Image 1 (cartoon, each protein chain N blue to C red):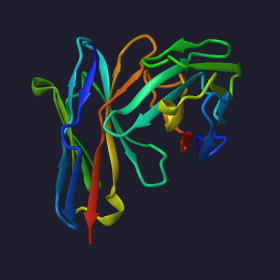
Image 2 (image 1 turned 180 degrees about the vertical axis):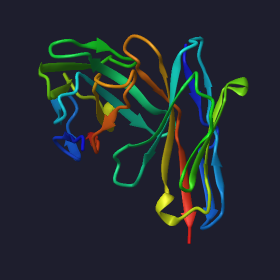
Image 3 (image 1 turned 90 degrees about the horizontal axis):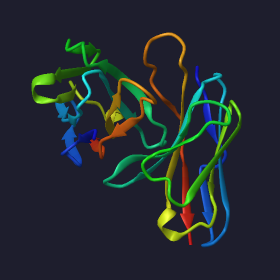
Length: 115
Length: 115
């Protein structure tokens, strides 16, 4: 079974802090994604990565950056956390082998609160 | 631009009732994919089904069934004889059929099954 893990389930940070959210997948998937989930808005894509060292902005990249130095790990960075970044953050991965389109597999999420 | 609308924010039914979750999508692509995900209280999104735009066959999996109609741009999800364990937030999502194949999610429908 595919396993996507996220470093923390709950995180509380102060405004202005630099925050790292880590995501690791164990299935050698090429693609990885970071979403944020807010009530009434569903999931919105922040950044995604085609493969190692490759990244592309999603729909709401402002205030975030990412890093993918190894295939299994995709980090989301909040350079200077703000209260409007309080949200649930979900990581996902997807492999490209086999069928023409593969579904994304999601981690359990990190609920981040910025005070 | 692609868009997914789940007009039902919350649905509450009594156990054993049938319930249908609506999903309407917009896309200009001729090749695309539609998905349903379930998010139980634990937070992790669970993949339920994928459909491609060339396959309008309805699908049944146990108590779950999906009705895909291109004529109305809808991909509705029905749970027959609902159970308390079906309580979750359900998301419909759409992906383009080329490039990064990013997922666009609807707002989600919170389904509560009461005993």
